Amino acid sequence: MRSQQDSNRVTNSRTTNVVIYSLLISISSVMFVVERFIPYPVPGGKWGFSNFVILYTVVNIGLRGGLLVGTLKTIIGSLFSGILFTPPFFMGFFGIISAATFEWIFSKTKFFSYTTLSIIGMISNNFVQVLVGSFLIKSRAIFSFLPLMIGLGLISAIINAYLAKKMEEIIDENNFGLKIPKKD
Image (cartoon, rainbow, N blue to C red; front, side, top):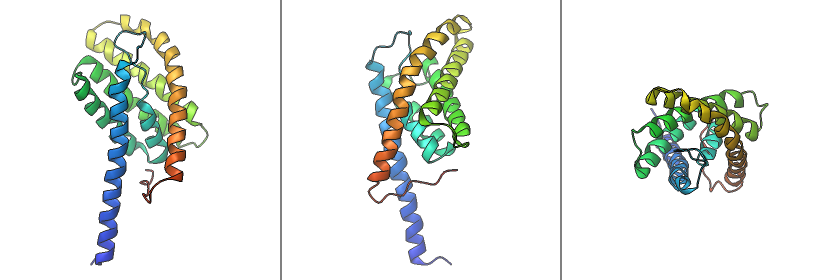
């Protein structure tokens, strides 16, 4: 039988996790909506600056956390942007699942930096977005945008790596007594 103190620790741990995930999802959802107003040279595209939160989450919490934050960020951001269940939603949804998965796989080696992980995630995300887009519009012509998307994606990948590292530093220094959930 659990003691009252053990029960309080479990409740506090769950509450802490809810608070941490809520903050991560909120930050990435707001970024998702805001970045729609930053001009992007590819029709219907965007920079992907909200993905720094997923990168941070995958590296510091794990795949399940990254998928949770990425999925909810895409749903909430798409809802507020008016694109829920449209082709751009599905392209972004499957792209972020792919990026989080690849970033997590490569982060397990402890060999890659935030920048390298971010570039891996960006390439995976862009390729899957184009693949899903070509399926939805029934045309391979969309693949002609992939080199430009990857070229521009390098800019956002480097910025995202910087922001994820900065977020890690800030949270490590000022975690306000919150214990970040353990990696999977």
